[in-house]
Amino acid sequence: MKNVVVICCFLLCSLLGLFACTKNSGNAPVPPPNSTDTSSPTDDDTLSPPKYAPGDTLVIRGDTSNNDESVLLFSGNGGISMPDFPSFIALGKGFNVTNDRARSIMKFRLRHISDSSRNEPPQIQKAVLYLYQYHLPADQDPYAIQQSADNGLELHRIVGDWQDSTVTWSTQPSLAQGSANPLEDVVMIPPIATPLPAGTTDNQVIDVTDMMRTIFASHSNKGFLLKLTNESVAAGRSYGSFACPAVSKRPKLVLYF
Image 1 (cartoon, helix red, strand yellow):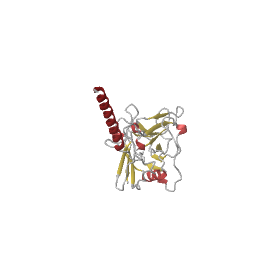
Image 2: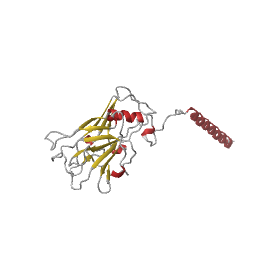
Image 3: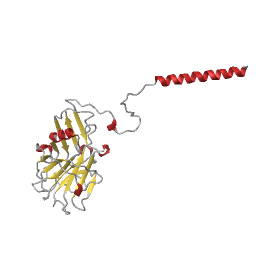
Image 4: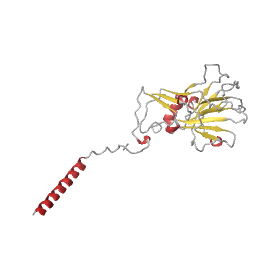
């Protein structure tokens, strides 16, 4: 008789446990259809994009650890390239003993903006690119010597595809040209006199509003290329890149909506 009572109690407890499990599973919250489980690793571009409103300001500091890309291109040595080089350089032929020319390309990763079909941002009121004078201590300081006075720069909008691991001088991407508004394609940066006087810098504040409006409108962000206007002269300009060890010297893009 005692065994029968024990068996009945066991069966009763099992039934109660099964009922409790069934009830709990029935009451568990159901995630919304478009939710993303952020408890597991995922690319942040799959998350709900932030909403930008008129009056907002977006500040983007270039950083290779965030998949921003920066490459230095040399015309010599078979078109050698240096991804993640600390300096963003433009050099003319005759600046150094190898007579190499150099250009630099960079691309900010515009999170949630390039694919603006998910989040149509408001019109850009102004866009500014900040470049900060910098050179590797082991390299020649271009600002400590007398250069050609014809050392003006050009910042171009890139329209061709490229990858930082494979691009070379001979395969560098195509540049925007022929737009009705020239400022959508290229911005000219004035020359400077060197050696730089004490207390002065070659920091640059570049208005890229028209370029960025075109990038947003086309949903195509390929980045920028920096070069000397006259690459046949002994001249050079140098700025911190996305891989610059001094974080404050890395390029900064500020967008005003």
